[in-house]
Amino acid sequence: MGMFDKDKVFAPDGPMDKWVDEGTEFILWDARVKDEAFEAQEGVIVTMCHWDVSPLESPENVATVSTIGSAMAQKAKDNDGSDLPAVVKTARVPSDKGNDAYVLTFVRAYEPKKSGAKA
Image (cartoon, one colour):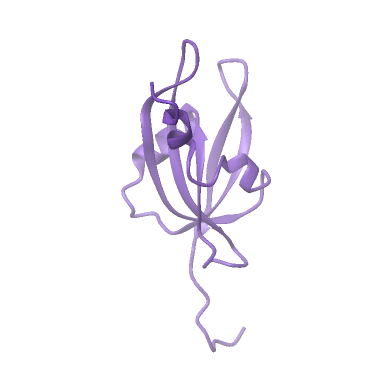
C-alpha cells in the first residue's frame, strides 16, 4: 500500500455526513462506486462511493462527496442514470447488524427552475 492510497480513495471533497445535515434535502447528480473492496480498518472491508451533489439553493455548486457502507453502496451500484438528477436526503436507520445504517432517500425528481418563469 502506497502512502497516499487511502487519501486517493477518500478524495475529493470529504464525507457526505460532513457536507450535509441529516434530513436536509439536496440534489443528487451522479453516484458511482469508487472502491469495491476497501479496508476501512483491519478486517473491516467496505465499499467506497462518490456522490456528485449540490444544495437546492445553488444547484451550480456541485461537490463530490464520499460514503462507505452497504446501504449507500447498493444505491450507487443500482445507479443507471435514469433517476437523476433527483432531490434526496440522508438519514440513519436501525439495521439488523446492531448499528445505524446511513441511507439515501428519494424525495422527488429534480426539475430546474426556468429563468424568467413566474412563480
